[in-house]
Length: 233
Image 1 (spheres, rainbow, N blue to C red):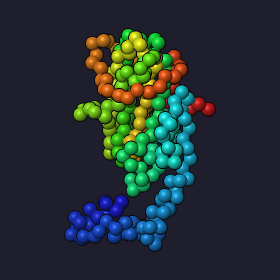
Image 2: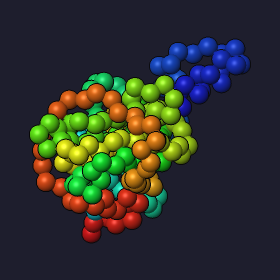
Image 3: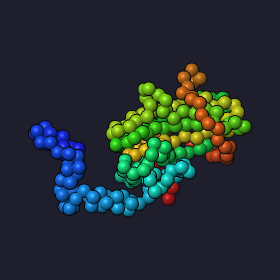
């Protein structure tokens, strides 16, 4: 609001600093100054309730609930949301991520190519994307893509409408498990819906990139709740 106010005044040859515009915005909301309004905003954010987790999905261990809300969007059926609670000035850092994911057994997909598709949209976001990783029996992390290295049809940022994104990976015969989901890097809001995982022709180009090894675990044999219709209650 302060940026918009400053820009509008500049069009009328009235020059004010950003801090001065922040003070004017605070007074429009009935507060004595920007410091008081800013504290009120932060206090309100800390009162946000956790989101319900969609059945079959879970946040990764590095997703900090003090910095992000992750789960079903209560205002939009069939959508999952990752939202930064802190603002840009908070110490999120470039390495802060929040992720919602799902893991399945690779057995029925061995020797196939699989395509992960989802629709994403964001609001005032640093970076949002889908990802998929295939772990091996003896050597985890044998196939991977998170779209971050793409020049086109890659991560989304800023404020956007719904955009479809996809990843194609080969499932080697030594594969043990498949992991996929979406994540938000840094600040903002990121929505996802309409996840689909399907087998495609071997002629479809894969999007594999190099990755780091992980650990082997036991997983469900099938994807579930890809449309976020089941809230797990």
